[in-house]
Length: 281
Image 1 (cartoon, rainbow, N blue to C red):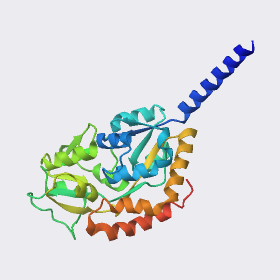
Image 2: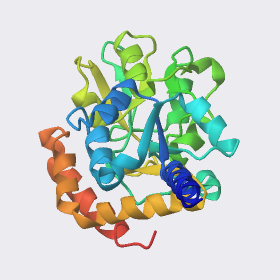
Image 3: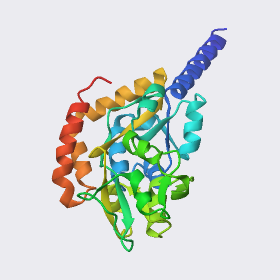
Image 4: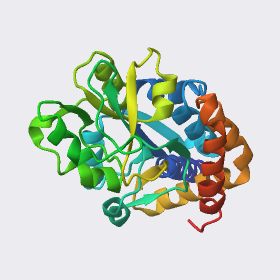
């Protein structure tokens, strides 16, 4: 009798342990194969995105299950109520109503409009352009855009004004690398890219760039999660890690930026992170 009770107790404890582990496991999606492989192999040397996210997730790494998934499918799963987190998301008003966010994890110098170097330069004021105006000047040109990706409120608002015939959309995964590859292959005259992305790209991108009017000087990347208690607790742990070593986070950023931009990036980092990382999550 005592033996049977002992076996029952062990079974209950084991079941509880398994349930607890499953409940605490966090699923994180990325639409980038290089990021997925780096996360799986705990390798933080590939890019700014990978290095900063690995830094933020260091204390909770063992509780994470990483999955490769296209942005479209990830958003579909989240909208269906699945418990998922996604790296490198931009905060927008619409997303803030639906999801929860970590404190900022990475800072990218704001996207610029890149134009093929062998095309006629745009007419601009101090190298600043309005996205919605460029196709009045070049009615047959096209711009490469990643589907299901937000470029931030300011750019998203401008993109809605561009005629569909002037847009070449990329629907599959690997959005950042895919758009850059398509631009290098001259699939379109224009693309919206990050300066750090261009600097770290494996192939030289032969293009001129323009500042986008109304776009803030930098954009912050966050961990975005479905709203539920487990994810809220997870984000608190991530935020604690971010708060614990801000100087290390700055060093990681400086490893992946054009040397000519280091002073500017440091200024923006101090402006954004040292304020944001003191906010209550």
